[in-house]
Length: 291
Image (cartoon, rainbow, N blue to C red):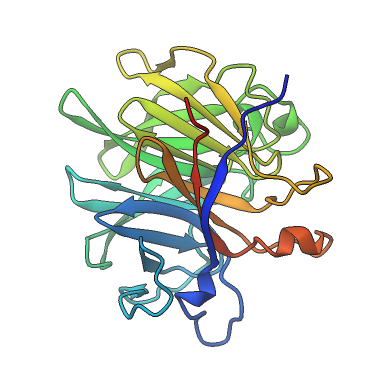
């Protein structure tokens, strides 16, 4: 049975809106959030927040960097809480003083000014296979962050590629750290090779896979942190011969109940020109009619 296919609404290279920093020629986009008529974007290779106006007008002077650049590599994803009025920016995993690899979450105010950093008390097998997605939730007056693991079951290596074991940690702040108070298991039918981003709109959750090049949408029940049904897996538009065009998508955010914005990383050296055409870009997709 054929999967439903998302419709491309708009697409541009991010360099059409934001200039790469001095000494760099690439913009390895890794996360996006739609907020107040703007798209806020983070990158794998730059520890800084960028803003693109949602209309994607090429000549607008309102696109640009937000706040100063900070030392270090970039971020994997970001989210914004309208309750705390804070951006939360995710670092996949770093070496923790206890010898394990754990994610970090930086907090910024609405002006892009760094406020503080907290460890996430969840250990991973490898530094480069940690948390990839982040979403903010308020439930019964308490604030949570949902942290999406890149590998299946939260593992790296061969074990993390065993499909059908997508995992999200429910994080709550405790002292100087974010601790996991529950886990959300994605339905076994979501057989993605990796998990690169997630987004929430009310109780509707979207999870993106870069390597599998698909999007899953389902519904989350906050009372026990479970997925209520198997949801729907969507394909991205392909070439006339059925070849994948989108192999570098890393960030996703809801714009409306029917549209989502996504951003893409730089294509790997062995990827085809067909895929390179769509890398380092910002994309707006619409759900098929009736969905």
